[in-house]
Amino acid sequence: MTRVLAGCKINLGLRITGVRPNGYHEIDSLFVPVPEPKDELIIEEFPGDPSLTVFCGLSAVDPHKNTLTGAYAAFTEKVPGVPALKITLNKGVPAGAGLGGGSGDAAALLRWLNERMGRPLNAAALAQAALAVGADTPFFLQDGPCRVRGIGEIIEPVAQLPCHGICVLVCPDIHIDTARAYGLWDKAARTPPQIEGAHGLTKQPLTDNEFCSDVRNDLESVILPLHPELSAIKTALRRHGAEVACMSGSGSSIFGIFGRDSRAGADAAANCFADGGNRVFLFDV
Image (cartoon, rainbow, N blue to C red):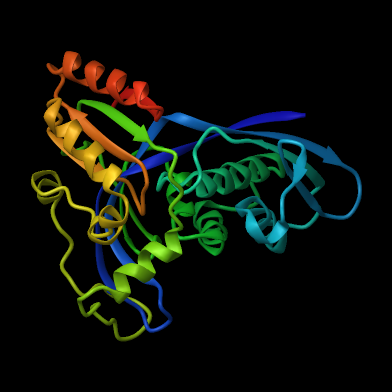
């Protein structure tokens, strides 16, 4: 039995830069891994042909509705002799929060499988398997902040964040479906930029400084009007002194970044939101 921890991320800005003919959205975003919350994977091996059973709590998880099944399938397609597994998933990352919890789980399993099988896949092959699971999954194979573009396959490590300090991450009890969020963006009163062919951005990538000076999540325009409480959290973070406040991914989590000399404001904000029944995490970024 092996215990594996899987992390999550916040998006320090998210711009939708185009829509491919197949409907996939291209983005330009700065993904930042955060130390909490985390999921836990308890992995047990069994003899026999490759197979995977996933439990969350006492219930078996639908194999068509979890990323671990996709990661296991993507790996076993490339590597023979993978053992049968039972995984008990203990969720710490809230679902539907825009933190990439499912993608982090898939990447953690891919990393573990590659180590368990003697590293048969190099970094490029492992990233290819990760992309087959989901657009965010390749990022979680990295060990630090990255600029992520395309549909998640263009990943550039970032040596230093343009915005750093004390982060207050607020996770309200609201589940937002990612596909629905992008669908709402498509249906809004705008014309999504169409991309000819399978690759290429319609806009020039922003500089890291531009991300910091105008940290903006394009999906806020369609999600916040549906959930006024998220707008209220963002406003309150600013009121407590956050230099940057933004929704992560497709929501519903909202984070604020406070300056290093604003610990009192960050602590006050964290206490305020925790008293409101939200899950709140405070850490340095």
